[in-house]
Each structure stands twice: as C-alpha cells, then as structure tokens.
Image (cartoon, rainbow, N blue to C red; front, side, top):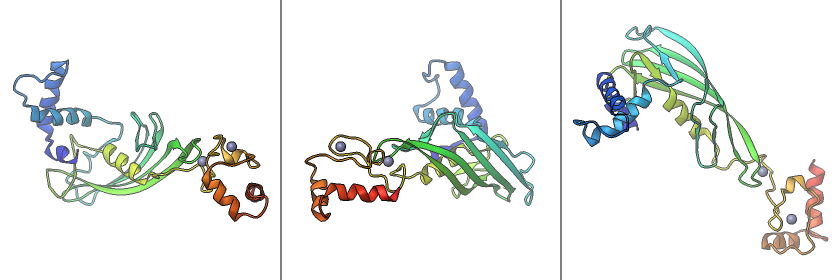
Length: 228
Ligand SMILES: [Zn+2]
Ligand SMILES: [Zn+2]
C-alpha cells in the first residue's frame, strides 16, 4: 500500500479514476495495463475520506501551524482478528498541522473505542483506545516519506488506522483476572463463583485440587469469593 501511494501522482490519479468510472463494470479500458489496475483502485479510494484535512493555507509556508479536530463515524471498521473499531464508531482525531520545508507534519492524537471478545470467557469487551503519532506528508515524491499531500489535502485515514491497530491488544480480556469458562460445562466462572462439579475430569483442575488443601476445588472458589 505504501509503495503504491508513493507512485501516485495527482494528475495521473484523476485521469485513471475517470477511466474507471467510464468502464463501469470494472473491466479495464483499452490502453490501461494490468500493472496500473492496483493504483487505479487505491487512487479512487484515496480521493476523499472523512479523515482528509485541507492544508492549502499551510502549504509552502514554513512555520505556519494550525490545529484541527475531527469526529469521524468510521465508515468501514478495521482491526485485527480478535478486536477492532467497528463501522460507525466515533473516531476522535486531534491534529496539529505544521508547514515544513518538505511537506506538512501532522502530530495526531486519536481517541476511539475498540470492540471484541474476551479471549478467555468470550463476552463482548470494549477497550478505550488513545494513541499518538506524527507523520510527514511530503509535497512531492520522496523515498524518505511514506505519504504525500494530495490535492491540497492530507488524508489521515491510513495513518490513523495503522496507529490504532498497532495499539490494540493481541489477547483482549474482560478483566485481568478473568477466570475464563468452566472446562467441563462452559459456564463463565466469574459469574458463578461457587461453581463446582462432583468429579472434575479436566487435568488442569485435577492438578489444582492436589495443590489446594481439603476440599480441593471449594477452597479455590472461596478464595475468589473473598476478593469480591
Ligand atoms: Zn473474560
Ligand atoms: Zn462447570
């Protein structure tokens, strides 16, 4: 994705996008080589997103600075396999935009909420997300920078999503001491503090009951009740 963005050029982008609209069904118009197909898609995706901020007033005026906040209803949703920001969730963006010699430096703080399932007990969890980053949007193609100013705008969408995804937990839990599910019957153990079975068959429980004093499982459960 990054490589393709580097290859984008404002003028080409508009031409390619126009061709795509005319083609309608998505088949390539004559004269467009398959190698252009990918950038054609991404350019059209890039043209306007709710995370785009106009920077015309800052461009080529080193030293100028402006702040801008956005509240975006996330249009698609994004995340990893177990947790993510769902479609429609509010993503609050505070951006400070500074004009530098080579481009626009965006210092960004993002606040939103990610939703997923506790990996131990499978109930829904909501995880508040707050993440900060900086990214330079170059005026012209430069290998040193991954992003560019397009049509007098900086589009924060890809950098906001990347930063949020990187901050998400790989193993979200409803609470740090979540006990998970009973391996024998599947009830959520935090909801059933006195939960026990006559003859535990799971080897993990068998091992625990030999460690605990009489009467085994009951001792463990009493302990978790006291914590409440
Ligand atoms: Zn849990
Ligand atoms: Zn059980």
